[in-house]
Length: 497
Image 1 (cartoon, helix red, strand yellow):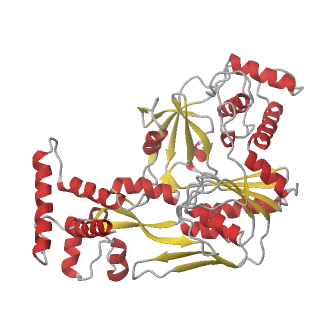
Image 2 (image 1 turned 120 degrees about the vertical axis):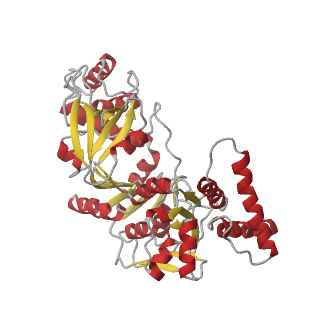
Image 3 (image 1 turned 90 degrees about the horizontal axis):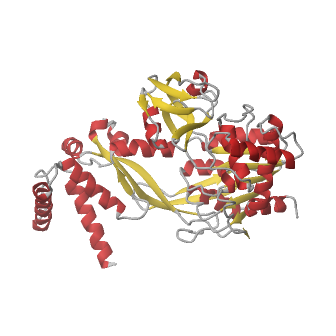
């Protein structure tokens, strides 16, 4: 414990010293002066001995990363550039064209075009393969690299070169970037049982959940599977907003803070009664905000948890913009209570720090949460009410990665499309012999389709016509029911078996 206290004291000292320009700190006593001298000497040592060029900002950022990363597994420091990517991921909002991308062989493929997006307006389609972005060849690039090239300021233009099935030459598209909202919520009506999967709790989760719940109501759904497997969390407020659709009147979670200016927060629901017979699927990667939802449903008996023990993360992080050394020193001359947190400068003094005045962003654990019954699950996780082992891959495929065919075309021999790719995955998982799924309906895929058609008593044309796609979708659901033991057990529970 003494060593831990020493580390904390050193960290606090480093924060104050590193966020003031070298030579400008005023030591309060001989010990502070010695610490300051040591840190100054360390800075000079690095600049003198390190072979390559390095500036004070790089060294300071590196020191900050070490400080925050040393606190716990969830605290970190991000440069301005890193923070932009991180915040887009957390918030689920960015400036771009509105497509989902995946890598298939050497190509980056559009796997989804968001409704009412710039991509849809421009005529881009699922299955289109990207070959150039603003005339730059992107063959062999990663999804992250291509995403970075496609994103850009709102109202700016991006030029995309696309290879499309049935067209020999590269097709050029000029797309205007706009504000995009990522949708982390999926819904299917599976034979009268609603299935909702939430991939993350970004800023849009509750909004999109309302849309799918309206669809479920139109479908007359009264039994629901809420899939939170592999959902590693997100925003607390979004988790609470989601829980309010399922948890009856009462507490959802309590957030406890240590900082003097932060009061504990109790989140509650006002729902009169649970609207569904509900099963929540969980596993070892159900974490953080997901555990807030799962814990509230379990404690309130609004539904049952089914699957394996959850991750056990009950720590809450705040993402805070930190002033640069120069900005901190400037405002400290004007305001005795100047804070490193630029948000506090805005709240207390009306000062909006510019981008240049922000050193970076700290993600720091500021609190913990407890479930409605008072459980603190950090490092422990939630135990499911019904324990069922996680599904194992089937012929090399995760069952959850099998996507339904959307009947957007009727691919034939030697054609390429996303429908071919999804069909190949279903066929491969089912044990049919074909090469690695690659979007191309080659002779092996052609023969596998013919064999499938024969077994389904369909005309064996080898073409992915709509009737065959419907049969493959039924096959996909059979695989889910047979090999996703957790989902299958959830259905049994909902049907009272």
